[in-house]
Image (cartoon, rainbow, N blue to C red; front, side, top):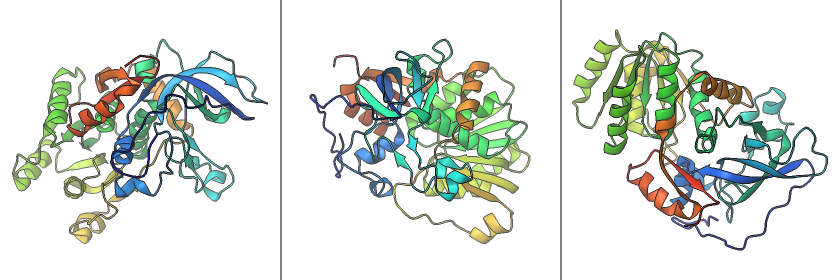
Length: 355
């Protein structure tokens, strides 16, 4: 349960079990995972404070089993293994009518504006459910499909990365997922930039273990002269990258990514800055005269991203390395601290495990 102040998170041991209303289902949570958005909420960053409606149970990445059906629910059974899209949309606004449900102007997000998954049970609309195959998606992976969907959506937004030179800016959890998708999809090269020592180490370890045909380059911009690094990346990518997947939200990283893009390239922007404002340097030269495309990415397309993501997992996309820590739900604050220090990628919590 979050309150509107930094670090305000309390556990409610006797919270009532939610009951599904007509058209909704209740899910017993098997696993749930900490997202970067949860960190922003925990620290009450300006970028997220306006979208969160405390007091609220946070958490929006999870999987579990249906254990109660609301009135009128058909074609679903108690016990089915599921996850759910946690953007709850109106279905009536112009965006929804154009099938752009992920940018519904009346979106409610479970875990921000209504109760989410850091609990033993969560209720969701039946139309938001996604069936899972436990042979393909075990619970520790099912716990973060929401985040993996963000990564897949960001890659999807570039249309195709096969045969392209791609830069992933930021190797936090979603950056690591995006990098795995880019490598799996057969990019011509993959460049990763990261400054956090822990994430940098994980990026280098993952790159050294990849057995595909995509060359992977890992750079720390904080340790290299910016112009020398820019020259090195251009040499490695035949003049510059075609696609930047911007996952960090850090203004220096965004500006560096724009510099690294080859004319006609694309920047897909998923990372959320800590503040509300962003300054782009040399905008005319780096964006207009290079003919770049900049696109903001939010959530997952409902439900084409889910189909694409589950298809990737079925085809063999490996994201096991993303899970670095597993702990009880009561380990939430410890998980936040691990993430703050850059010592974790994805922290998966088990509501059914004692502290």
